[in-house]
Length: 134
Image 1 (spheres, helix red, strand yellow):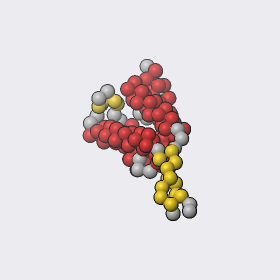
Image 2 (cartoon, one colour):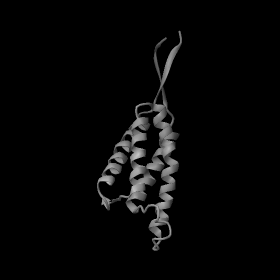
Image 3 (cartoon, helix red, strand yellow):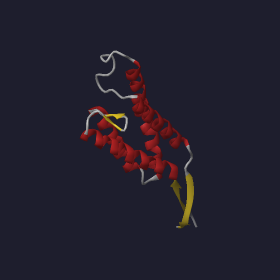
Image 4 (cartoon, one colour):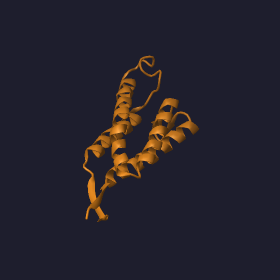
């Protein structure tokens, strides 16, 4: 008899769920207000990015494989946003890189931490679980 196996990645799924809730809340709250929310900058581009990532994370959370893929998929855009944010926060001339969006230091820290954790979650091996014989 052959056994059917399924993949488990509770850390990846928990990561996707937490990122989904946090980013969706920040994105929606950003559309409702202007300025800052709990130290995080709001702006149209940041709000759209956070809302989209939050929705994608919540869609990826139920399955182990999609949650792990979300981890690496979130790494690259958030790494780019972090680099952009560091350039933006490090310059005193608003016309340099702030025309599109202007993340603050809290935003840069959030994006960098989530990017690194996403890569870590992707690289961690998933557990195989044997289920009932077929």
